[in-house]
Image 1 (spheres, rainbow, N blue to C red):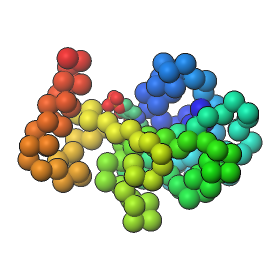
Image 2: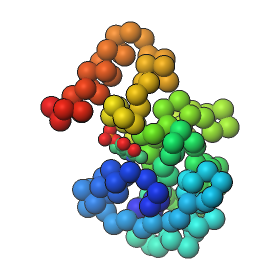
Image 3: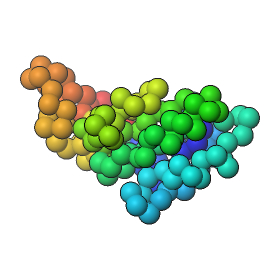
Image 4: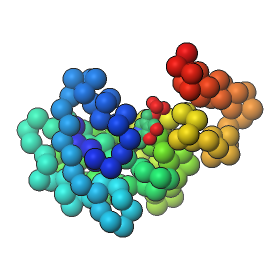
Amino acid sequence: MITVPNTFIATTEAITLAGGKIKFVDINIEDYNMDPEKIKSAITDKTRAIIPVHLFGHSADMDPILEIAKKYNLMVIEDAAQAHGAEYKKKTVGSIGDLACFSFYLCSNYHVKVWLNLPRDLYRAAYRIMICNRYAI
Ligand SMILES: Cc1ncc(COP(=O)(O)O)c(C=O)c1O
């Protein structure tokens, strides 16, 4: 699984807990997210997926990442835990790759209600999950 070292440890924990191996590619200095130019040299015949992380509310540069994934038949799993509502070329992050992960952890996404514009009942459910997560319930 290809991902970046500039992320929260949960990104890589998920890989190892699922029995995968981590292959890091470095970030670029424009947005501190995955540098698409560094992905190709990290791909081997064991590579299954690329996990770009949209860090600090900034989207990774998804078009070249998707292009490489298509060429090498890899899945793209977006780690959008720190970027609810962020956009890449008018698409909301989390809707661009094959799969996406969001976080409701209190510190990661304090303004969930505003960013997701959830209807009241869904907001209440999301808030409960967020609080349960905080207290490890
Ligand atoms: C980039 C990133 N990925 C994954 C996670 C994990 O989120 P959670 O703790 O809600 O599972 C976080 C949490 O802060 C994160 O910042």
